[in-house]
Each structure stands twice: as C-alpha cells, then as structure tokens.
Length: 110
Length: 113
Image 1 (cartoon, each protein chain N blue to C red):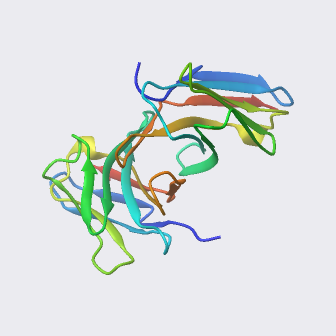
Image 2 (tube, rainbow over the protein chains, first blue to last red):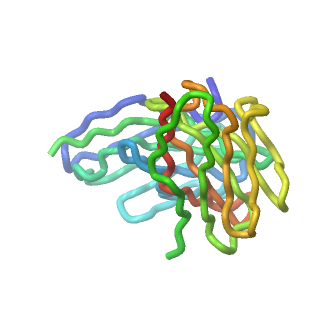
C-alpha cells in the first residue's frame, strides 16, 4: 500500500453516530495531518498530531497515532449531516512534500 | 485569519493552450507548494518551492510545467501546452516551515477541452 492509505474508502452513518476512519503509512514521520474536503472544494486542515503524541482532541474530533503500527485514526463523535465530506490523512516526507492518502468518503444521513 | 487565495476559481482552455494559475500565499509563509487532484482521485504533489527555487518535484511536473514567485507575493503555476489529462483541481499551499501545518487555497478547477 502507499504512504497514507485510509480505510474504509467509504462510510455511511446516521446523524448522531460516531465515525472512525483509519490511516496507515509506511515511512517514519514527524507528524501526521488530517484534512477534510467537501465535494469539489478545497482542503481544510483539521488537526496535526506529532510523532511524540498518542492522542489529540479538537472539538468533536479525536485523533490517535500509533507509530509502532504506523497508523492513525480519526474519530468524529456525534456526527452531523454537515460532516459529510472526504477525509484525508497526510504525511510529510523527509523532503519537502506531503503525501496524501486516497481518502475516506463519509456520508452522514440526516 | 489569513487565507491562501487562488485565481481563477475555474479555468476552461483548449488543448495546447498555455494557462497560468495564480496563488497568493499567506504573507509569513516561506515554503510553497502546488498539488493537483484529478476528479475522484487523491491529491498529488506536484512541486515545492523555497528560497525562490524548486526544492522538490514529482514525476508529473515535467517540462510543460513551471513555477515562479515573481514579486514576492504571487506564486504561479504555468502549464505551457495543456493536455486533456491536465484537467484537474490545482491547489496551492504554503507553510512557515517543513514540520508545520500546510494551509491550502480553495483550488482552481482547470478544464482542458
């Protein structure tokens, strides 16, 4: 698999439920970032977790990072219809670029 | 809060024509990037730019592509002779330093006919 692969590829839940998305990566990282993209729109930065952090919260978002397994998860609690979007994890490489995964498409039904 | 801006929001061009996509990064950012996203696919790195030169580029960024920051504020991506497969969303991004958060612009949708 490529650097920054999310699963599931698509997730459909009811409003109020929690949504969990996972990301795996291959190389060592300094940090990992999660972005949201509404259909046809730009990328919105959600949260950055550094390699020495295991968990981070921001509002209804909770991100975990397990560097031993090279994986991260994004949990959205009490989801809303407005959370419907694609979610990407992104990992900076040792150079200048950031590698994005293919994303998880989340659909929250009202 | 400062934002990255991009113009135009949508550009339609004929195959073989030159296009210039423009970005105004956040003023205190030092590292600049272009990414593209073909419809329904992942965001792909094109090029990074630091200290007025390209610091890294992908295999996508061939001789048809160029970038410049002519006046210290605008950051442009030029495609010399567009191909149908260049149709995509192009995102500009910037950051203060490599470990920091990248801030993305809203994107320019390029349609090559």
